[in-house]
Image 1 (cartoon, rainbow, N blue to C red):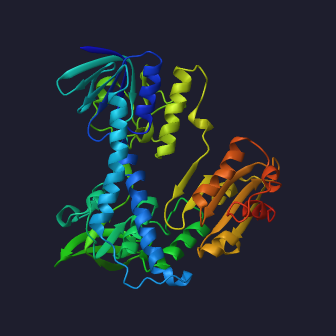
Image 2 (cartoon, helix red, strand yellow):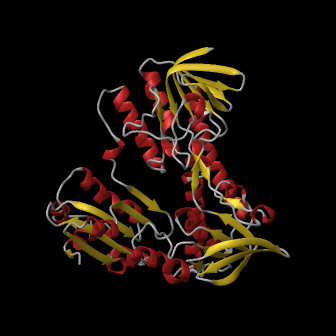
Image 3 (tube, helix red, strand yellow):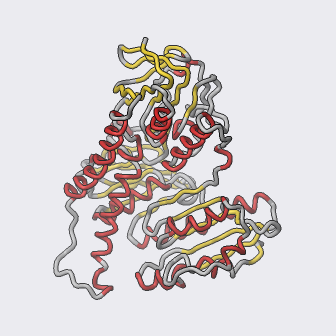
Length: 458
């Protein structure tokens, strides 16, 4: 039995940073990684996909070059092997950086292998048994693949296996019209694939307001992406060299034919093979580890951080999980995940930056509120860049004058959203931002203008 002060299972965004803090406090720490250091973000999530987004954006803008008075005297083509090589190189640098950091961290011992609980304080890694008073689970998640008749017979891709694609699919069918699916849809359309998106819900991005969903759909359709909403997949099958996806839309049956199939239905936690039952750790009906607002499980001395706890599912929320745990157990400063304001982005082009409540949620709350909107075509910076698609929207509590939420679909929307988010964390009234003098020409300078257009939410 090898004894440590703490054991960390998994090296996603929360794990390495926590190991650094624990070792810095004089603890001995065992870090266990089953496969790739850095977790989803570094290997199959943010880093590689945004690298692909960058390549796709450049191809798209090169095709638009003549609009800007730039002549490219040849047809634009994409070298998929070179695109993948660039993506692999960038991910590898991040992955190796995380591994080297941990292996050279004083007080930290790295184990590579599959971790499984045998008791509440004991973890087995292959033939080794480790024990500690504190154990932190940071095992992340993986793509969810539903049961669909014929799926195993035709073969399919996921957001993970897409990282190995070094060719151009002639026609990519994406099952799932949400964040992951739409990013891949636009990426491969811009690389040159024909793309179809099939979504079960009545509209894309069902969690967003309808005006946002409609605008995103319009943007994608302008790029000739074929969209099928309110469509239940009943079966998939091979038809010659093609994959046929049979869909039912309100009783009307049809087929979508393509060469490759991407499953982008959602994600599930990597908790089903950890031996959690041996430790008595409670999970919900979807497999997420149940935690309180301090990320403690029902078993004393065991915490769950990152995607496996169902409290965020983003890189930034996973890192904040580390901050919450470190503050509570090392700094003796009470912090809670309930203090977190929802914030995330969709990295289509243009991107969608989202903070706080949606308009739908505000309406459901029944509070008196105001809303302000502004189309991106009114923004000078966007007009000059030739990127005027999208709009901004902000929601304000009429009584407290506090910002409730905002949506920024447009140029730099993922960055501009932070001006709203920071004010919300400061718990300051919207009038502070309305009176701010922003730099011209930027997208952010139009946020005070939008606030000046606030009207009662009817």
